[in-house]
Structures are given as structure tokens and as C-alpha cells.
Length: 342
Image (tube, rainbow, N blue to C red; front, side):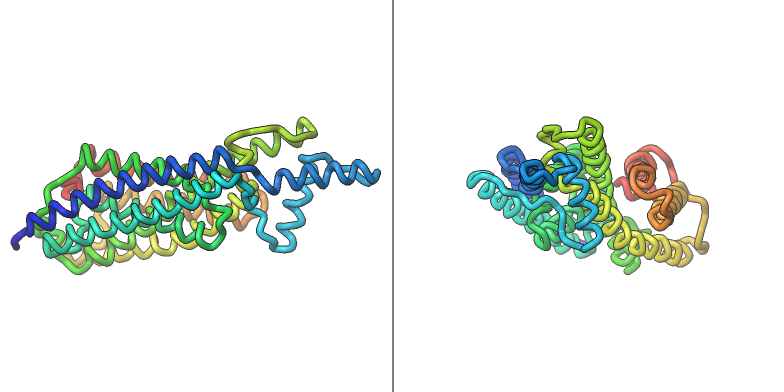
């Protein structure tokens, strides 16, 4: 099986271009985040002042926010703090979003051209697998932000891990474009590994939303304790904790069945390749551990006593098991999946 070196070189250039586009997009989105103002927070303070003036104000700024959260949750109104940035803030936000989209296009083109150059699906090693994960992470963010522009600022927190991962694999795990080892020459590669990358990319977005939820919930709790508005450059421009918690749960609900499918197809492929469905390989064990943790999270979400902060920590635990599976199991632990690090 020959390799088209010219096309492989183009793929490498496209990969580098994607990193540059993501970095520029992150810079622009940070400008939007810095210059933007929370319209919903300003509205809450205005309502509080109006109630005080008319003598009906039993709520201060923080209390009004809590009332708005309860009302919006009950009525289904979008409460993800639509931004009212300055003109430059709005322009920077649109520019950052467009650059993130450009980076996604370049990265997809890089992976596709690498696959064409090697006449295979470009999911045969850690470099390609991690690149695909970043594609679905950014893709998930773009889909969420297109549906509701108020989520555009989440890119400030989604793009940094993406850029970090791409730079890391480019420096530490890059491999020349070449055919895969015989064990991976199967149509199951496209089915099993594609499902795993899709789920992992969405899991990462869910984990980021969960982390932001904890930050926002702590900030809102501080406002309730002080009985007034508490300025915060980070938490102040985030969607409400209710919206972030709901977003984390919805992305998790979408990704979990895909991860389940990835484990099932992996077992079928293992039976075809090694003559058994399950062999207690480290990769299999940790994939199942992650599945159990995420199943517990979804169950906790359905149990009234485990909503909110406690369920959020379970989601972060699941993200930690996924990171351990990818970093440690692939690079340190020896097993039947060790070829994925080539």
C-alpha cells in the first residue's frame, strides 16, 4: 500500500493551519468575553431598582436573578444570558466564531487528506484519534453556538483544551502518514473508532460545561449570601448555572449512547480479531469504567437528591477516567491496544 507523500505534506500544513485558526479565534473570543456585558444581569439589577422605587421590591439584584432562573426554568424561556457587548465586542465574537469554523474546516481537510494519502481511514494512531476528538469537540461547540448565539462565549473555554491537545500531539505523538498495522485493517476501524471519537469529543464539551457550572453556581451562591450583586469577570459573563447544568446534561445524554455503541462494536471487533468479546485488556477495562461513571451520572441526574453539584462532580470524574484511558493506558500500560500509540 503506497503513500502519497505530497498529499500527506498538504495534510500536515492543513493541521498547522487549523491550530493557527483556532488560536486566532480564541484570541478574538476572549476579546468578546472581556468587552461584553451581561444583559441579563443588568436587567436583573434594573428590575430590582424599579421594584425598590415603587415600594414592591422585596428582591435585590441576586434575588431577582434567582427569581428569573425559577421563572425561566418553569416556562422554558431561554435564560443563557444573551450578551449585549460593545460594537467591538460583538465584532470580535463573530470573528472568533468564524475563525473557529475555519479551523474546523482545515482540520477536517487535514484528516481527510491524510486518509486519502494512505488509502485508509485516518484513525489508526493517537495522533489521528486525538485530532478527530478535537474535530467533534469544536463541531459540538459550533452547533450549540449556532442554535443560540448566547453560547458563543463558551468558546473561550472550549478552544484552549483543543489547541493544547493539538499542539501536544503535534509535538509528542505525531507520526508520518503510513499504512496501519495489520490488526487495524478492518471495516470495524471506521465504525468502532469513529463512534469513540464522536462520544469523546462531546464528553469533553459536557465536562467543560460542568466545570463552568460549578464556577457559576459558586458565584451565584456568593451573591445570595451577600444579598447583592458581586462583580466577576469570569462568572459574570457566563450563562446561568441552571443553563450550564442543563447543557452539560443534554450533551451527556446525546454522547452516552454513542459511547455505549463504541464499546459494543469494540467487543464485536475483538471477537472477530482475537476470538473473544472481552479479555480484560486495560483499554477495555477503562472504557467500561468510564461507561459506568457516566451511567451513574445520568442516573444521578434522574434522582432528585443528586442533581446539581454532586452530579457535576461525577461528570468530572468520568472525564478524568477518559483522560487516564487516553493518556496513561495508551502510552504507559502495555496491552492489546498498544498499537494505538504508534
